[in-house]
Figure 1: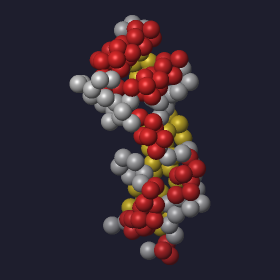
Figure 2: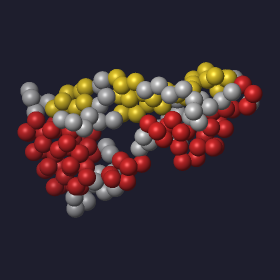
Figure 3: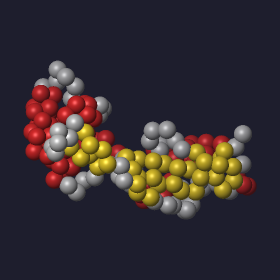
Figure 4: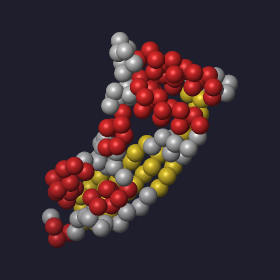
Length: 158
């Protein structure tokens, strides 16, 4: 049964654009929508800049992963001229030490326990937490960016 909205799980597979567009044409109704949602960290605060520095310095392949995230023009090109809307929804969290450490450790691009960079990374994170904590928590701001665009599908392409 065709659907009106499709939201790909995980990353929008822009590298296989033709196959992905064909799948959207298959499952979407004419004039259906593709909705892609990403969480991007706030990068303007002193805390965010220092956290980014930790990822760059200690991450195992953070730069490759960061640089692979699609940009707005990538998504618009993927949609082949379809309507492109962009919305930012604030998502502020207050993390205690365990929450912040858990968030860092959950990244696929950071060293795990036993790796030579793990202890120095965690030391740097603890210093960052101490410098920015208020009432035993740090503010973690990730504006949730929703970028829905109409799928490049017309009813005649089915």
